Length: 588
Image (cartoon, rainbow, N blue to C red; front, side, top):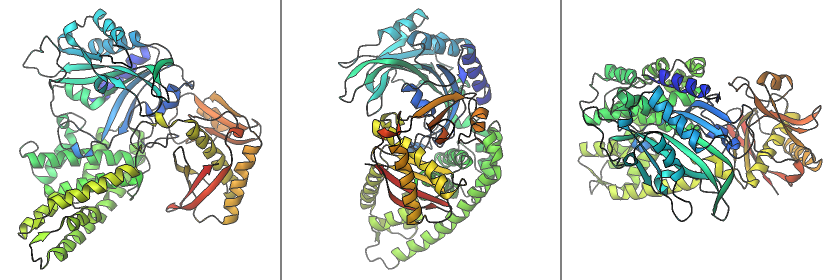
């Protein structure tokens, strides 16, 4: 079974259970500016899990492309990945534990034909804040799973919640015994690495209050997630994901270019995996409109590409990114967005590779300057870290260069500098890679509504060619990027600010309607019409229907009336990138 076969089987199955398929959303979150990338299938439907009605109903399913960067340093083993596809199905206030577990069980055992003797599950063990999940275990028992194959685990293993208030609850995970030459033990031991997790039903039974208490949720939800890559590899009896159909053609291409054999040398195999993983992720990120830069998504993209290039050097290849990208495009030829952006993908990869190869040479020259005439024959950790930070040199290359010159490197000091850098980076990007659920507070809801007013005001002042290019919202302020090729004048800034505040003072009603994307476009609603929407979308109108101040396709959340917002104030207007300006604003 390959990825296409698995995805089709999954979507067809859940459609037969009255689920509506929702679009595979962009990797760049729309109207969820608290994360850099879509990291799970639930991200595009967060507002519906919080209680807003979904235009397609209460039963939803899809396959979602995702990027996760928190494990980037682990990539190089047989199973960690930056880019992956996630199968997802949701009950948004409809069915709950019994049906969710029955659906998952039927899909895995009847559709994918996983035998019971290779199947096990885990449930929440309970603690002082929430009871043991006997309800879920009883469903599994009725389905034929023996008591010995049900493990009860603590919160750190079988519970889902966000750091702040919001929906939360136990989960029940499904496992597959991967060994073909050895029968699964009678008793399920979750610590045995031969048991591979293949799916997880999050059972959103509770709501966490601001005080940290757990109460029964008014709207109970189901969120299933299953990694395509892991399921395909597992069902094909592979212990190495890079030998599965969604990676093997890329590995073969790297073998051809490097004239080295995958699996023969541990260090070279690790480099091949990093190249395959990082360039696959880069292809998808570029297709979604991101280019290499030194900030946010562009920085992540640049890091992925450059890390791949560095590992290309380890196996003796250069100017190879386009060859790898073409293999990725062939594997994922069912993604129209990749076909539409093929030339852009190849161009951006080539430009970044040329740029970094030049930087690499500059870095080597800088190393020679630093080490020329060293009395103690030791490169300081601070200088080593400068090579890492300014020229992208990983420690192993610095150590390699130093060894050739018979120079030691103060690794202890380097690690200290690196730790300081990591702590600063972590502080600066806190919350960026977490679920956006915890940030849908009253403050961010108000600021999100204010971005709609700001967008409309900018178009009224600067012209209809202005388009939103990105946004970021914290409880304290909003940041809004838009297309405009010159600095705004003080008069223009003041006029925009006045328009927004006038809309607030007029106490405009905010209404939500459901309609098709075609109807939304005809009605004058703004939206990303080059993207794929579902059959029905939510359109938010601020003001009178016939002559609105703002009308946009959006997933929310919004206040009910502009009078709830307070005073709008622009604190800064600056350049973001070529042809893109950035406004920062607050509500007082």
